[in-house]
Image (tube, rainbow over all chains, first blue to last red; front, top):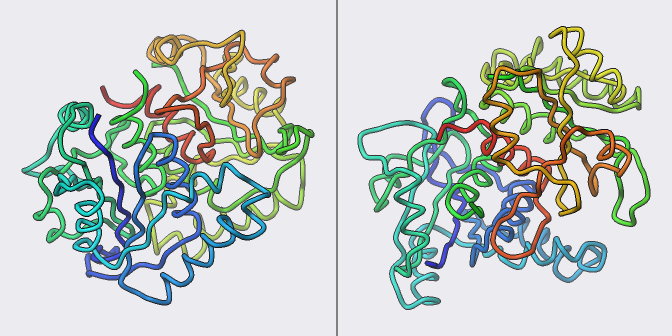
Amino acid sequence: MADLYLALLHYPVYDKDRKVVTTSITNMDIHDIARSARTYGVKRYFVVTPVRTLQALAEKILDHWQEGYGSTYNETRKDALALVTLSNDLDSTVQAIQHETGERPHLVATSAHTGTRRTTFTEVRRRVEEAGPPLLLMLGTGWGLTEEVLERADDILEPIKGVGTYNHLSVRAAAAILLDRLRGAR
Amino acid sequence: MADLYLALLHYPVYDKDRKVVTTSITNMDIHDIARSARTYGVKRYFVVTPVRTLQALAEKILDHWQEGYGSTYNETRKDALALVTLSNDLDSTVQAIQHETGERPHLVATSAHTGTRRTTFTEVRRRVEEAGPPLLLMLGTGWGLTEEVLERADDILEPIKGVGTYNHLSVRAAAAILLDRLRGAR
């Protein structure tokens, strides 16, 4: 099985008017996605933001659960949050993985939209199951990853389809479903 | 396809010491699960609590997105939250579905634990795909649904398995994965 990494990008992402913005870090994104990451054997969950004050906020949350009162109140939360790594941008995230594994990660972007270049879940799952290079699954906050990030990706995963055309899952729900489709027990 | 309903129970559920408690309603549970429910064609998402003041809080949240500023700021959120119905308890939830469909719903409980009486995702998915009675998928907040609720269910769905033994998904992540496994496009 390939090593699987996850990155939640707070920049560069679109807002609802398709302007490129930096979104805020939220407590719930860190917790929920860390717990999903832990469930599906993700090696590390990168919370990516260039904003130092938001990094400091995230560190405070992590400290509470890693070292503070939360660490004894709820150990399963501690286990999950141990996967979280703060990172400035995509470049340093890729470098950290390269440093850890000795290989450049295969970049898989996610999008709620269909488009010309999309890879199926079956194909990406096959890659996850093989003993190839590490994979970095990239998720965008706000209204999603910018075109610039999609273009940089080796694969753009097809959108999650439910019933009908509604495609406004929360990033927390999308992360959970993606991990289950790529690594859930079948 | 059978009509699919979802209920998030805030009572009766366990706390971490396996005491039966009522948990608080949270904004994020309403929003995230409503968006997942909308994505997977759920007919109605019941937020179940016996506490009137918490029902009033939930109504305030819903009003903001249904009628207030939120309804024009973000229409996709309005679409999702239109599925939310507040309910006092499991009995009145079952009655509401019976009233709406003319049939008693088939009750499917969820649990993070294995046990003697568990139904596979494949079997429940088959039931969802058939033109049978409506299904009510029941999720517990806190540390999960009590034995009393599990015993009342017609089926108890097998736990979601990832990689390894960690089984502490958030209820928002679990709801998303359950819906995708039962109704996602394959």
